[in-house]
Image (tube, rainbow, N blue to C red; front, top):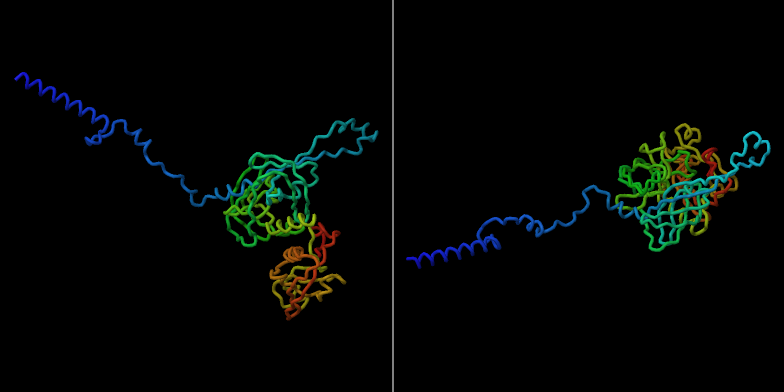
Length: 390
């Protein structure tokens, strides 16, 4: 009997030991929960792959365009008052200004548009600068050389010599619509590269008195001092315009910003790089806005277009047969609705190359070929202050 109990005790002990080992190493065999297995299960759980941007996110556009947007810092020496050497001035005002003058600094933005280092910016950002420094988004810095400016459109081209430059993709500003979403990228107030979003609020803004040739994209994306020369891009990160001005009573953004369309910027860039300057077409007419009263006075039936109130004798338009009282309704394939559109369309023509003009003369429709000349320099920059001529 004693031997039987000893055998029974040994058997139970072995079974208990086996149960303990199995329960510790493979509890699932026994259908028991895994004590402390929470950590193991978390470590062994499959990881969720990184998700795509949230619907409606513009992060892709920002990542694509932002590397090509740069900060521009300019400096120029302050002008010393020439009267400082006048003894009477010294007698009344002392030695004011005799110490070295502090340099004046400016801040703006720019957009790299070529692997050769060409950068689009605003003329007012670099105007009169003695030195131009460019800071890239990747923290590289370089001294820039001024290639050319066009005060008429407030655009300028500078160039840097660096390798492996990020380049922005040029979009199509002629195909955008009011309501399209856009991003403004620049360096407002010098805080560093900043991206703001909004929509296209209006197209073809003109008669603002900012530039000679105005065809602005209006946006409510926040644009502040320092954003000038920066990029306005679409939801794909393609360049639509160069941010240039804001309407503001406080100096900061009030939701009304203006950008120069990339179509204009591209034309200026190509002209400056190719010819060193920008040339504009000119046909020698004096245009006026068409109203029912004016149309009745001149006896024309056109309801839209620009009426010609004067034609320069011996000018390109006169040579082509344009007369006072004619209404220009189309330049090339582009309809003309107002004086600003005619001014911009004619300016975009290549001097010496014939262009088709659609006119209304009384009840008749005419198609004339006009060969524009180079816009005389003496007229540049006067159209905001005097009677426009074209």
